[in-house]
Amino acid sequence: MNKAFTFFIFLLTSFAYAQNTFEELGTWNILNGRYVLNEQWSINVEAQLRSLGFYGRYHYYEVKGGAVYKVSPQLILATFVGTYQTYADKGGNFDTPKVNDEERLWFQATLHNDWKRLQIEHRYRWENRWTLRGFRLRFRYRLQLLLPINHEKVQKNTLYTVVSDELFLTNRATYFERNRFFVGMGYQWNSHITTQIGWLNQFDYFVNDEIGKNFFQISLNFTWRRKQNQEKSKQVNDTL
View 1 (tube, one colour):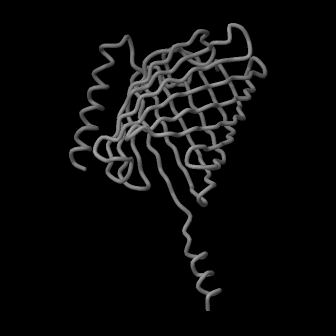
View 2 (cartoon, helix red, strand yellow):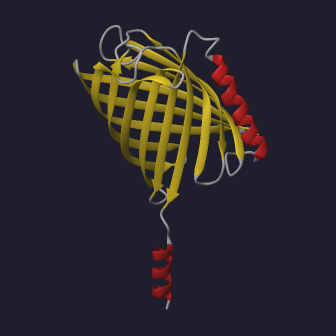
């Protein structure tokens, strides 16, 4: 565990110095919470905060939540609602006027399959977007590859590497809108907490939400599970 912590500090420092390599490195911060109700259902909430400078010039935040249904280990469905706020790029924090004031309702299907230790994920998302420029539709596809390093699968005290690429399409010409490429490392401390850091590159064909560039991304994920004490007590009482 100490080695993993040392590795994260080293990687974090490397990304801090990387801002001299790129024209300017932004930050992308994610806080995710998941409450597992049972084997099929869970409730998720997530908040994001982004900046165009390295922990400066904050210009974007989003808050969303929804329900997730596990059809099988290979197929997961989800629906979410959220607010997504983008501010002007003037050099300060949350400068007005806003570039975009948006509400979304989206539906998602995620397919999972493994090849030996490699975990492969296909994520498909349909977004309904109410923006300053009216209603928009958007379709997203993300391919993610995750490889545990010190265990056969992701579990307690597991260090892993992850690579993903996401394509954004719309129902209007020119149809292609954006691409996001991410590479990073993660560590699952226990069944409740997972940390992930990495580098994200965003390319925008049309800049309508935020400027495409390089970001240092860090995410913290919490998972809680519903206790089954009441169910166990009921089973005991029924037996008696």
